[in-house]
Length: 199
Image (cartoon, rainbow, N blue to C red; front, top):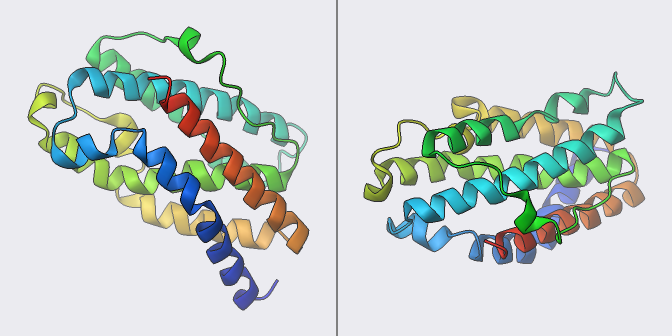
């Protein structure tokens, strides 16, 4: 695909998933974060929810890449769940998967599926740069010394997102593959939303 086509496809991905993005944000304490009213209990709920989300997706992503070890996408299937476990240690809570068992993660069977899922996961890390500042300023969380998950990739976040976009547009070679990626991104957003609604 030429650069004009890939740019339009990335824009299509952004536009078509916007309603799911907004619906997910609405149930993830976004308002409380922005107003500084997020409580420690709310933050703990977010950590537990995100751990279920990311552990589920990491396991699913790895399955797609089992026989594709040279696939450069493997660099994006990292363990964000490890950051969440560190944060849970900081606030003194443990895993509570039972609450979310009824929420089934999307099924990923192809590289196009994987890119759709990673679009949501990697894109969510962009918001972490803004969120971590809000958490650090929140008086209810002043006793916390670190925010591993929301701090994410730190100053490398933007560069990593650009690398993912470049990889996505060079990996998806047909309109059909991009359509598959869009549909899987939508499913992934819905998965996030359904888990957050269980908080």
